[in-house]
Image 1 (cartoon, helix red, strand yellow):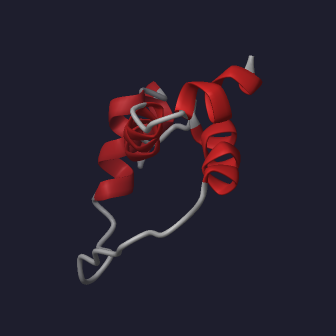
Image 2 (tube, helix red, strand yellow):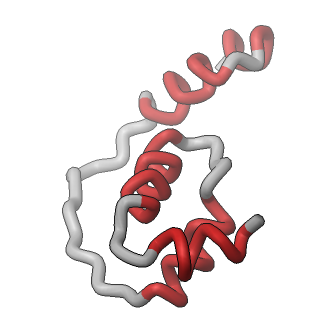
Length: 74
């Protein structure tokens, strides 16, 4: 924590975040629709955690994503 407070670097933030024991690793299946994905994309496309940016990259690969999700964000 001290190192992150000193440097404020993104790498140190992730190191601090991931060093916290979270217990069991969980996996889940997600069922959603384009309306929900549009909200998720707009809220998390520039999120601090790389997992959310990766998720948004996957949203961009969906059929009709450009027409239904991304175009309206601009």
